[in-house]
Amino acid sequence: VPDKALKKFSLYGFIFPALMAGIFLKFFFSVHEGFWSDELLSLNYALNSNSQSIYWDNTPPLFYFLLKQWLHWLPHDPLGLRSLNLLVSLLVPVVAFFSSGKIFFSSERWLYAALLSVSSLSLFFGTEIRVYGLVELVAVWNLSLFLQAVKAKKASGWLAFSGLLLLSLHYFTVLLVAAELSVWLFLFPRQSKEMFKSRWQVVLAALVVVLIGAMIWKGIDFRTLKSRALNDPSYYLNGMYRIFRLLCVDSNSFALLFAFLLWRDGKLRPLQYVLSFCLIFSMVVSGLFSLEVLNPRYFIFLNPVIFIVLTAAFFEKKKINRAVAAVLVALNLWSVYRSLGLQKSGMKPAADYINTHYVPERTWLLIPENRAYYYPYLSAFSADPAGPRGKKSVLVLCKEISLSEDLMRRTFADLQAQGFVLKRTIAFGPKSGEGVFEVMVLHEMERRSL
Amino acid sequence: VKALEIIRKGMLVYLTAWAFFELAVLVVHLF
Image 1 (cartoon, rainbow over the protein chains, first blue to last red):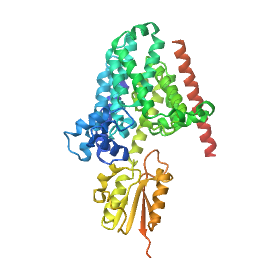
Image 2 (image 1 turned 180 degrees about the vertical axis):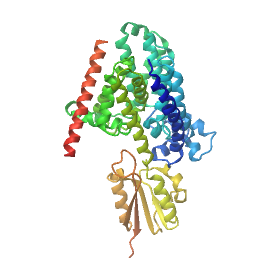
Image 3 (image 1 turned 90 degrees about the horizontal axis):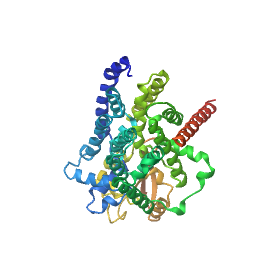
Image 4 (image 1 turned 90 degrees about the vertical axis):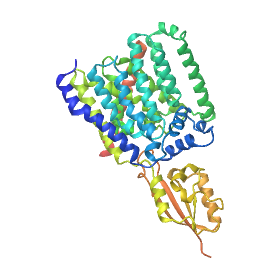
């Protein structure tokens, strides 16, 4: 039974301010920063004149298809380009509110929508021009349907459809769909037989097989499969550590968060099972396939799981549950505050620096790694086919992490052979060690005077 | 459902143990 004092405090002290803050912050995150290279990559796929370009990424093409249709009608300025993701991320709390009618009381629904609208993962990744905002939106719908299905002991066609949508957006959602299927099989072994008789589920199962096949075909080389996971437990820990680093500030609170989500009793037991399966599957996948970079945004579909359980915890009798949930929400808000000052990329500052300090007639710009989509920021320096011949200086712009690659070594050796010497190196973007984002490095080389 | 409970409790123990392990690492690091 909801506590009256809590309800009153929540409505005027938290829920409305949080919803307003969510709307404001989503606009803020959409306009305050330049694009980082993954966003430029998305735009390149969606706007490329080659009709096959939406299939170039190693994720399913649905998002690029939608983005292509959307951008056909909208201006290509920063807000216009990010408008699809802005709309999607604004819809997340709306869908959360309307889809949770059968699993929550009305005050719980308001709190759920409010918490989700200021979640740090949602704000930081939902508004960028990648698929993650849409994944979160569909996951919110999917998880509400899943809980309804468990309650009614009957899976609806819409549940299968939302799972299918998730799988057509991002491969990592296989973890969620597989976890839901596993829990369903354990909970209702008898109905499972019927499940496979229904058309929707057969279609879904077939598509899971096709998508996993496509994933293996596109991305995973079984020759690189390592047995490291079997003998090195720290490998799991490292992978798990990265999953919700942004949300939970550090790994201690991350482990505590999940322990809390799995520990508390209540009506959301099925969700705890789903979460357990997701964690186990992600460990197995990261271990078997040696996926060292587990960026938190790949797991954005677990965001609604976290906030459903936190919401329910606020309406429990045990004070300890409310206290822990309050601490975790405070950590999330701190994470939002931290992300306000976090720069994702040095791309825009580097491009601004180049545009103000150099003249195209004297300087040749080289962007190795064949990343022609960086050029929107550097239109004056569009790739000159004549190369460095006749130019006084050469600029090499690359990501800090690619400096150690063979391509870069060959590039520098080649330029040195043509008589250029390194004059200075400037770094742009987030400070080293600040998470997963890109530091851009600009090397200025000058022609050696004879 | 019994199997699900075992899986859930296993993960709970694992994550709690890890949280304390990380806490210990933090304490050692601080002093």
